[in-house]
Length: 99
Ligand code: HEC
Image 1 (cartoon, rainbow, N blue to C red):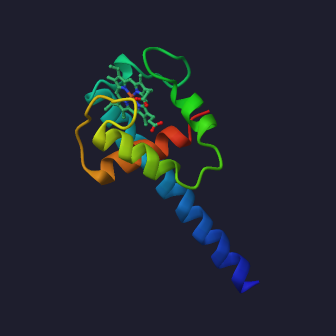
Image 2 (cartoon, rainbow, N blue to C red; image 1 turned 180 degrees about the vertical axis):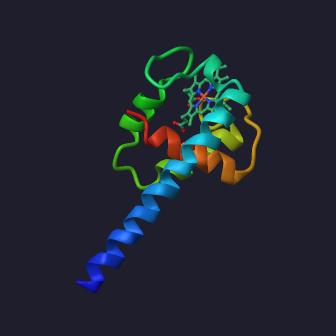
Image 3 (cartoon, helix red, strand yellow; image 1 turned 180 degrees about the horizontal axis):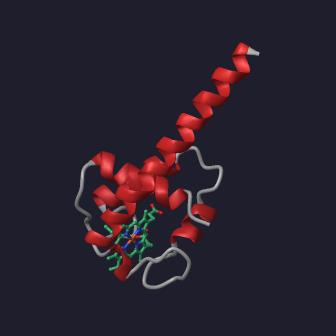
């Protein structure tokens, strides 16, 4: 009994901290005009966030791959993007959670 109560408490904390990420990530995307080429659902110049989430579904290296693309330009020569690793990780987590 004790176990399951603390498990539920931990799950609640995780759910809350997960939700807290959505704010900064969305602010970053707005502030850095990623939406010139990306939206959540429709393909513009760049793929939609939902389609990226689909493409990387189940890929354990998804975050590392995307972080590398954003920092170096990647294979396709992505625009250089500003921000710290932590900010970019938050944006990537947001993208991977898009549906
Ligand atoms: C000028 C248009 C343009 C802008 C602005 C842009 N992107 Fe992209 N993005 C693309 C295109 C095109 C692709 C697909 C080809 C590629 O991976 O470079 C892409 C791919 C991506 C990917 C997938 C990378 C991968 O490794 O599969 C991520 C993540 C991403 N963009 C995030 C961002 C973020 C965050 C911003 C804002 C800082 C941004 N993009 C701004 C055009 C853009």
